[in-house]
Length: 382
Picture 1 (cartoon, rainbow, N blue to C red):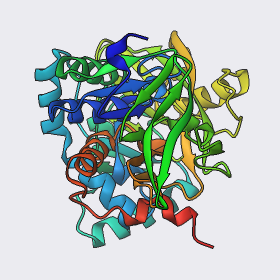
Picture 2: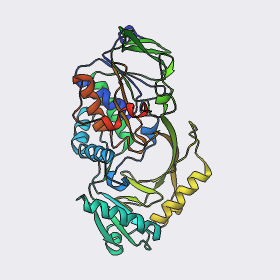
Picture 3: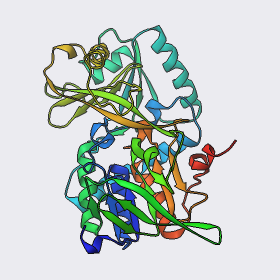
């Protein structure tokens, strides 16, 4: 490894959208920042995601996590604009909104519940009858019963976003080391006070007073002082399979959900369908059963989906914590060690706000929002 890469103001483990965005913000603040990844930049969950920015569509109830997601979504218009200016890459931020269809009795019960709590909370949700829904999207299942529309739930192209963040971070001065395993986060203890001193990698040691763990599904495998930093599998991989088909011109313009799947239209004529939720360890294989289920659920939403040409199939590993909440903030026992992981189904949505709060902690020692609900300390309680 080149000599100049052996010392940094901050080391970020993980080069997905979360790690790249944090690196961008720190590099903008003149921090010498190194990002390390066991694979390639944006090669795991960031590559496999659907790109929905849909807190209302996916939320079962209000609370701290919902508020975090809504705050993250509110940052996106400015974030997308700044990112394109910094990188020259359009992340295809689209604001048509999201539809959620009721197709059977079970769906109606779920949507009624969601409609009631969100309407009562004063959120921007609209109830559409069948005719209004089909007027918006004529290619949807004509037997749908009704739908909710979430005008503020948007989408981006997650793969373009990963590339843009990588470019923006590099342009700001961040360094990237790929195909590099982190063997251990090194710490020292002086008078009983523990602090990070750097990371030992298979390319050598990198000295740093700040280490951010943003390794997604692999976060629980990292070691500090020869122990897994998040021992007990606090973050586990959850496999999600996806299908992309070639879409007839402007067949769908909104992101469309049912209780069993979703469709995401992309500029350029692709329609993405997802997704499975499987406990399969680190197995990223695409299976016949998984793809068949996705196609069946997509055909419920979009008439004739099963007749469209398949462009791509893939699978990724979502990082899921024990309580489905992200792990954000400072380690209570090791100075300079921070977490930005466990985003599960909301990594793309939470990228801007995660980058903001983690960079605030590194630069100023405090964040602009309360991170207690997402602290790793919740896993340390008896």
